[in-house]
Length: 230
Image (cartoon, rainbow, N blue to C red; front, side, top):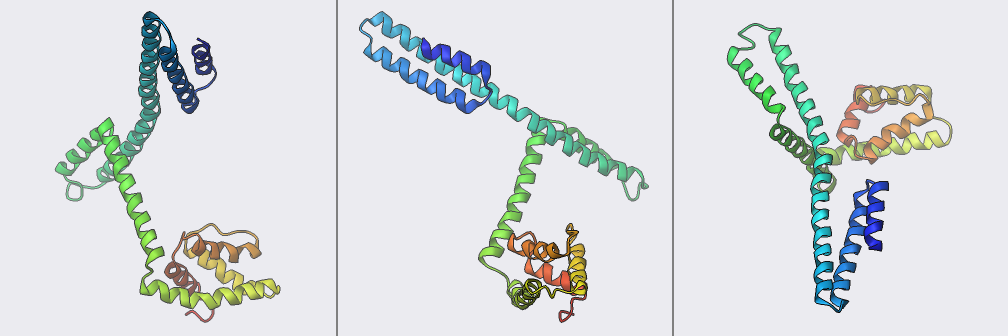
């Protein structure tokens, strides 16, 4: 009974499912132990019934908890997918029938309807997850097995980093070279720090944290006309 009162209190003050699960599991174990230790058959039956009831309540809590957490995520996916299809429809409406046929319009309208269903939301989430997984696989492959171009780019960039950081440490990093680095960051469409001494670190972190490949960074530096890389 003490455990039951504690569980009721816990449900009132917290929405954290992990706390509720822990308390429920302890309660079920306590009731089962009590039923085993009880002397009378009637008491055993009552305690076992209470234990089953608590377990059943937990199942119901799980179902409602996950439903409440899942529905907002699905609705958000539905809204995003509907907007994506609507954007395509609006762009198509600005053209003529040669560019945006009647058949294509009907297909888009059907897709717009599907985007507003739970099944459409699930499919959109699966598609997005698949795309992210593919991108992650490509990054993992690049990390574990770099391409010849990547190896060559790293080889070219290595002495550049050494020279830049050596000059930066000695306070000899010129404003001209900083401007080349800024231009490279702009070519990579990356936010550029306002402080000059942070520009080099920002560019180097792109490679270290695998936000950009060595091939991309090398190309950005070449496009910025960095001395010795043209």
